[in-house]
Amino acid sequence: MSLNLKKIGVLTSGGDSPGMNAAIRAVVRSCAYYNIECSGIYRGYQGMIEGDFKEMGPRSVNNIVNKGGTILKSARSKEFMTPEGRKKAYDNLVKEGIDALVVIGGNGSFTGGLIFNAEYGFPVIGIPGTIDNDIFGTSFTLGYDTALNTVVEVIDKIRDTASSHNRLFFVEVMGRDAGHIALNAGIGAGAEEILIPEEDMGLDRLVESLKKSKASGKLSSIVVIAEGDKTGKSAFELKDYFDQNMPEYDVRVSILGHMQRGGSPSCFDRVLASRLGVKAVEVLLEGKSNFMVGLIKDEIVLTPLELAVKGKSQIDQELIKVSDIVSI
Image (tube, rainbow, N blue to C red; front, side, top):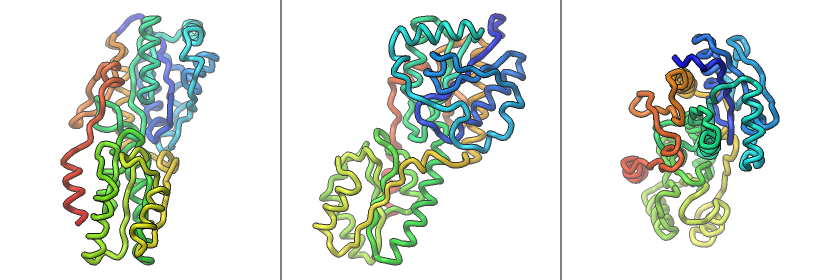
């Protein structure tokens, strides 16, 4: 155990995700277990610049394991992108007696932590929190499993309407740069087609596929679209296209939006957050820095923060094949 580590600061940054509160809870209680102090930093790096700190103990995180969002709030900070802003943040951490940081967030948050460490040698450990599951070095990010369950539940409800009215639904889900939500939720909800950023299906093939579905006896269809789909068309643009090219369908659009980020975290996300939070504190106590804690093959692993930021999560090609087979 590092003799110099007396207080750890924890913050959430970037987009919120279910499981962040469970991770905060695990960090705070791990600090208490190992007899060191913990300080919650509100509103991410912006709160660090403004000195928005609060001492946290085991009882301060009661009854948050089941809550979505983040009790520490989250905010994007343009000021932290400047050397002057980071100097203010560093001075506030020193004044508060904080010796190391646990940063819960995504690539942007980790990049900020890397730069901060490079300038001030300040120990940083990252916990991946984003529903997009687009961070290298972990099979699951906090909130991804919950978002999948939310999307599948909503598509199940849309399916009831689609089948009742013989409609074609385009359901747009989050995933600007990664199609993990669209692919997995699409398979889980029985979508006829899935459009993701990693694969360029093309409009002609999509039309042909839906025509085959129609000819095979399917009276309604659901197409799940990641918001960064390679066709370059929004769900509403696709609707206009299909209104012209497949007038036999009554086409509707549903944009699921930020409902995917909310809600009580799933059991999987709560357990994952707890495991990652405990490990983050233990890694700092071992004197390590600039790592992200993640989950691969059900084992907690360390990935250098730089690699987590620069690496790219890969879509599962087997799942793409599965999707093609089970949707005929």
